[in-house]
Length: 223
Ligand code: PMT
Image 1 (cartoon, rainbow, N blue to C red):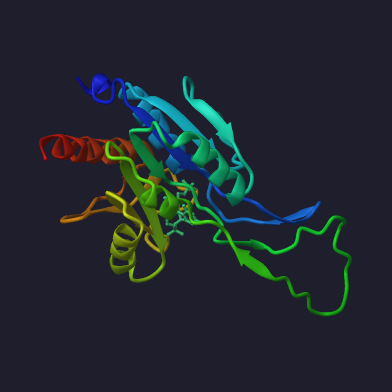
Image 2: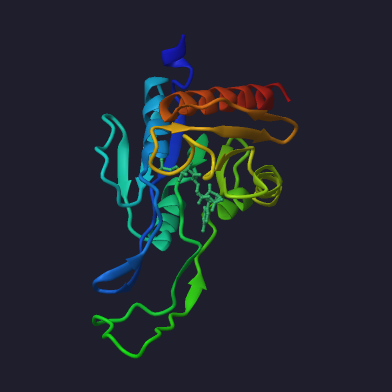
């Protein structure tokens, strides 16, 4: 029964962008709308899972019957993930996390100065890599890879380096894929297989991802 495939499973999804403050009025962010992660969360809930959604600032309504944890920055998301990941069975990282943040958050509004302005950035924690390092026996971890070139090679590298079970690769430059659209065009990369999917709604892609994860869980059980 479709509705019961994930019954009793705890699913953690991250969605949306992060915002990295420069001063009290400005921040650095990206174009993620949160749609991909929210649709995965809805699909998981409809398949019977107990779903937690950690979300950056987006304009979407929270899906019903999902435990919402709103965050702003990559560091906030890291804290929320660390507090919640341990007893999750499935973790899906659809969020577009800022790789860097301004080294200093100015206490007051940065004043207009000369013709150029230099801002130093420092690296944010890699949340997916942390999850890979601390992965529990029973967990399935699914990352995303958003690229504009060498999609498959870069995604495969992420899969191995970050100890994930699966990577969903999407290319911003493909029509109907990536940020803000209601559809996506994805390639599902597992340790031994690569499958490129046709364009489909983000909800249907969410369901497809969760079916692949069910297969991985069955393989783990059989191993
Ligand atoms: O939100 P939408 O508008 O619907 O758009 C969907 C999407 C394009 C944001 C989504 O499909 C997507 O590709 N999400 C991942 C975007 C991304 O940050 O990709 P990346 O290749 O930079 O990161 C790889 C993986 O590491 C991702 O799972 C990301 O969540 C994770 N990561 C990245 C950096 C970091 N500091 N910590 C992380 O955990």
